[in-house]
Length: 117
Image (cartoon, rainbow, N blue to C red; front, side, top):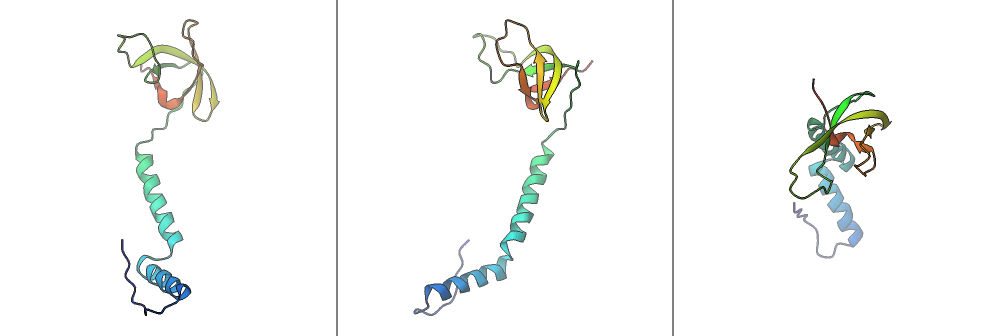
């Protein structure tokens, strides 16, 4: 957005800066209030797509394999089911994996899907 501020040709840089900020604050308000409002709007929009997922020890889950490089020709989206062994951090879980699957056993909750019985 362009701002045109009427000033004299011989105005000093300090005076020009003061006029600019006075003009911007008059039309848009104090920046901190606007930043907080914009941050809240972005957060509310992002939270709409978030899902609250909690797994218990012993739950069985599917593992999304979008980041794995497996054999050519396999077109699976999920592997499993795997048993949840423990919760590591607020959003990561350790799974009981077969010995032939050589990957780290801890996964983010976004890669896990609870098996509905």
